[in-house]
Length: 239
Image 1 (cartoon, rainbow, N blue to C red):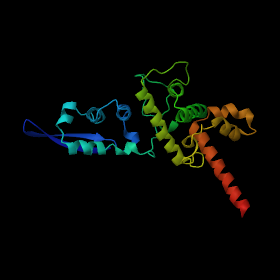
Image 2: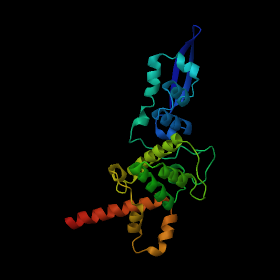
Image 3: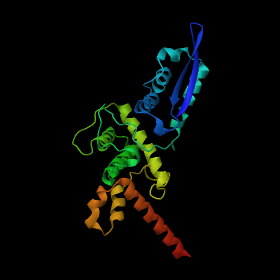
Image 4: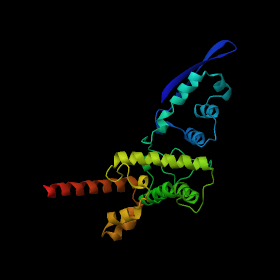
C-alpha cells in the first residue's frame, strides 16, 4: 500500500484527505476489483469509478482538478498489466455470502480435483465465451461441495474470471514448466487437465483418488519437479 494525500478547496479554505492505495493486485479489496471491471464494461463513469475505488465522496471528486483526477487514475495502471500476479481470490462473497469452498490464499484449501475443474472451465470460457461455462466456473469456485448455484451479475463474474487469470500468473511464476507462459488457452485451446492428470498418475491407478484429494499446490509442485527431472535426463542422454 502507498499513502496518498490530496488537497482541495471548499469555500476558499484548503483541506486535505489522506488514504491508502493498493500497489498490487493482492492489496485490492473485493469492491475495488469489481469497480475496475464495471469501469471496463462501461457501467461506471470515471467520476463514479474514482469515488468507488478510492472511497472518496462523489462531491469531492467533482472538486478535484483534472490533473488530480489524472494522477489518481494513474495509480490504478498496475491493473492493466496482463502479467500482474495475484495469490488469492479477492472476490470472497460474490453474492454477499461466504462460501467455504472458495480458494484461500495460495490455494491452501483447494484440492487438485477442484483446481482442475475450475481451470478447465476458465480455459473453456476464454475459447468459447459461453455464459453457461462462466456460470459453471463460478459454481466450481464457490459451490464445489454443494449442489447450489451462485447468483450474481455479469460484472462480478468477470471480476472473478480476471482474478483467476492473475492467480494463474502466480502459478506460472512458481511452476514455469507446468504452466509455460503463452501456452494453452492463449492459443485458443482448452487445457486438457484430465489428460495431464492421467499422465501424472500413470500406472498408479490405485491411488488416483488420493491424488485428486491432495492439495493442488502439492500436486503441481510434484508435477513441475517430474518435468524438470525428465528434461534433465534428456540433456544427460543427449550428451
